[in-house]
Image (cartoon, rainbow, N blue to C red; front, side, top):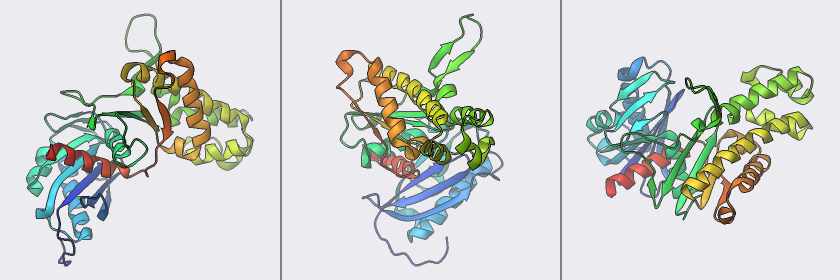
Length: 329
């Protein structure tokens, strides 16, 4: 740390987002006000050993920005992009990083002489919505975040839903159209049909066929250019085929929501991510109607479906809050 004079004397909580492209750390007080932050690229950290060292560096920078010292840390929460073992504190696998069986809790706990707690990054986002966002005061809250994949998490009576040996709620892997041959793992999953990548690829095809002139003019057929915002803009300008593509994906996601309702009976379902932020009316309304069309009559008035209220990096606060819940329990 630098010789920056300390300006905050109380205890702090550190939230850390171990993203596929960036590492973000924030320092919070007990009211979850941000005192300091730091960010570095994840890329360039060759392997988990180098990555853990970089995580330490980012936390040090955030503490420096907050004007606090490591001995003020009450706990560190880390949101991990992949399945975790919550009992062992191990990141089981992060495919985008190439990490396997990384003992994050032990490493950061030893490095900063405090308790560290990990959770899945989507779980962290859902817990943030439960603590400070659209799922406040819910008894059972489910969060679903369609993006490159379909992430989901749940909170029941203030506790994240986790398995004994693995994080859970892998909603995106629910089979929609499984193969009937009985061989292999073929078929179509919710993620394959509802993700932003699927919507972008179908939109590119529509643009190529001349069915989406506004999208074609804005970004052509390059998938990397077809963002949620440009999809929403094309719909607003009159590309009906693009709206049909989005509504089909949202309708299929509603099928997954109906399954969750029958399994868990949540009172609040939060939808988040870029697609929801870009077109909340179309997306949320379509998911809601699709779910209502498919649940049993007794469940139709038992839940609400709402858009997330918090910003993209709210998961950093969520994992800090979850760490506090575990440490102070």
